[in-house]
Image (cartoon, helix red, strand yellow):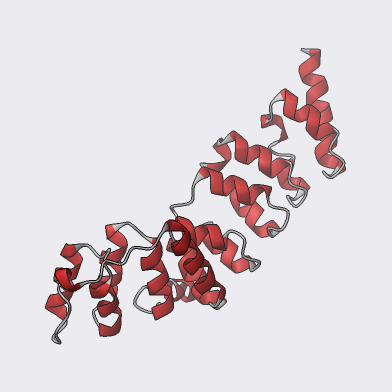
Length: 225
């Protein structure tokens, strides 16, 4: 039931106009425009947003023209108003702040770089957990989340379970040295740390005794050999 609910929340055909507009504002990927158009053939108001957006690929715009029966703007009539990156980022930030949790989760699942940079700081646990399902997340973004002292433990646990991410040393180090990480999770990765990082970890009073003791034992073992 929960999985079905999540799928509905992430369905572009059900996404609010605000979510669609933010996705379009953020993206430079032609596939996003095509996916939105394909999912919203029953919503002329959404198709018109795409038609009138200067960044909509011509191929997508032509497909939309075939669907809409009313007159639409042709490419030469579309206003080519270009915002600076700073203007775009500020606009995206302000618009996301007005959204509810479900809409933020929709953006979290498929949003581009600017959207993710806003949602990575969101205080809602469900938004952050959904963000971790975004296939566009970079190693740097995962590292930022793994370092965060405000991130919920469930998100850290989710990071630790993805083998692909845990092959990256900066993410392992961030996870082990984060006081929010469950000791039961952190100790399983301590042995993967470099000796110099173990030495720092052993003296880190913000980390649990179990993690510091494990670091100390591994250090002694390495020095003995």
